[in-house]
Amino acid sequence: MNLITVFPVLIVLAMLLFSSIKVLREYERAVVFQLGRFWKVKGPGLIVLVPMLQQMVRVDMRTIVMDVPPQDLISRDNVSVQVNAVVYFRVVDPQLAIIAVEHYYEATSQLAQTTLRSVLGQHDLDEILAERDKLNDEIRSILDEQTDAWGIKVANVEIKHVDINETMVRAIARQAEAERQRRAKVIHAEGELQAAEKLVQAATLMGADPRAIQLRYMQTLTEIANDRSQTIVFPMPMDLMETLSRKLAGGATLADQARGAAPAGTGNRPPEA
Image (cartoon, rainbow, N blue to C red):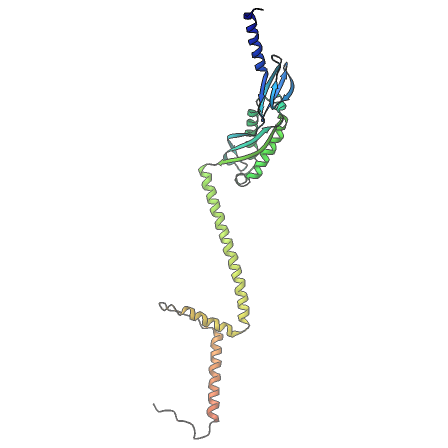
């Protein structure tokens, strides 16, 4: 047989053999089609395809990190917000990912954008800012349910940024300041209430004995007497005046009784002026 005729044939056979041998990595799978119909999923490792009869499509089984571009939406309380997020998903069924949908990555991306606008538009701005975990789980559940028919598992969804305009930022700052002032007033009122309760208890204890009130007045005078740069006008309570009057009257009566009980002629004459 002529070598010139055999050599091209050998080259063609070598090329066909080379093209029929495929090596798939651990995270790759091959969806094999035979004469245009699905045959099976192969891999990983070394696989052999029948040239001209079988074709394959590689599918990456690793988790894919997809950045959802910023989405303009209006919240339920009519606030314009721009939100972006990140979606973590992976292919769990290579057959469905290739056959059930065209370009599963683009399809998942568009679905994530639509779901993000739809879900966040049903909530107020305060909920979007404060309840991200709840919203992340809600978006993930919707995406996972809708992509299940494509052989895709959505593992996690995270809202990254929530951007609002400057006017709304100032309004939120004023609202936060008003809220802090309200809390401060409530705390101050609670302190006044507790102080009033303690004062009532103290007044009840002092009212049981008039001497306690007199001692309190004396203590107050002692505390304010240290400042000598001011004139202090201190009201004298009537019960204290009555107590002093009774003391003075009692002392005078005792003196008179003592003088009356002394023997005649033994009294001392007052000194002359």
